Length: 337
Image (cartoon, rainbow, N blue to C red; front, side, top):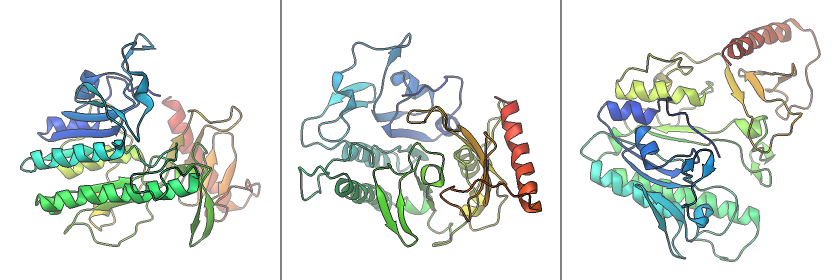
């Protein structure tokens, strides 16, 4: 699905160097093998979709069942393929791997990265589904969300039982919008998923952080956060230096986690060149809390036009000023591409 340049540095590398025990479970989709995962800073792994590419072609020794992620999954576990029997649920295997890791490493600094397998198409019944043969996407999607919640709760409970919950910062977020086959009813009306689209429905996701005793419960920030902000934030939490041998785009949002003002970013940049994108679609945008500018020049007031149905044409001073600021930001990114 993708490829991660071996010259890149991950938060796994940074924390491993700082003495943390590290673990990754769930999705990989970045090519390589066990040595690749280790080189990116992870001591232990339990991964789905682990392609070991050689010279640009898939390794012929890979099991054909690599795509099985839910019932009877095939997972790459600390360098070895494991084909699980029917009745074994992939997301549960990954979660159990993590809780076991926590129990083993509870007396040491540890870091777990969990890019979850669930919730994701194909939408199929979970072990807790009443109808094990249901083919309804919406019903199975609901069941998957509930099961995901169960797995997150299992990890939190393990942290509590091992006596380390109060010394653990937990992040929960999504990587993209919901599948467009799913419409969700919210307090603001029905919202159709926008996965693989550049609208809010495809690119704006929840971010929840909890650190018992340190982060204020129930506080909501409207600050912009970009995925590039995780590396400096994690470094800030661990008290280690951000890598200085490369350009780091992110900024720490640890102050906000602790309930302080911090230094919120003025804009975020987003691009999508992957599958599902129509050839004529725009590929990049820069946005702040209200205004959004695409690389094709179209601009929207997304605070008042969430579905982006009316490109701005007016020459009101605030629109002109916003376009100028966002265009300067987009130009800064393009100079580095």
